[in-house]
Length: 117
Image (cartoon, rainbow, N blue to C red; front, side, top):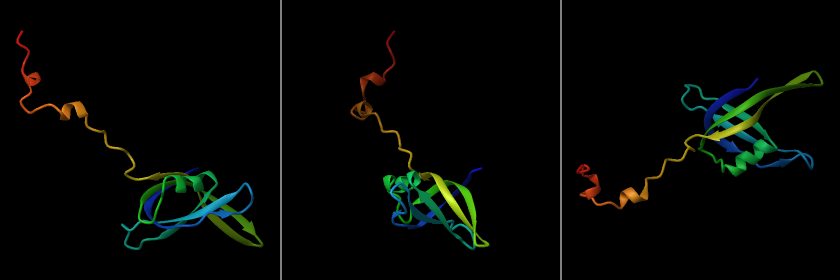
């Protein structure tokens, strides 16, 4: 089961190499619209860590993360992780560019007239 969270980036952690095939980084988000904003840590491992760097995510960016909850026990203690599997920067969609041929036409272009027949 997956969850989504949208917020502002407070911290982007450095890549931490755990083994030769596993690496991770920390991404901390907040939702400043709440009266008592929370600072929520998310773990990005391997491909999701690559997404952070390839999308150029920086402090102050608005992002939406899709994540799973992970939990484990160790010596009668329990730990949980918000594991990111999808990352989107808000406002990433490109605006359609204007047709340059339309911009070159003069205001009183004869093509704007009705067809004579």
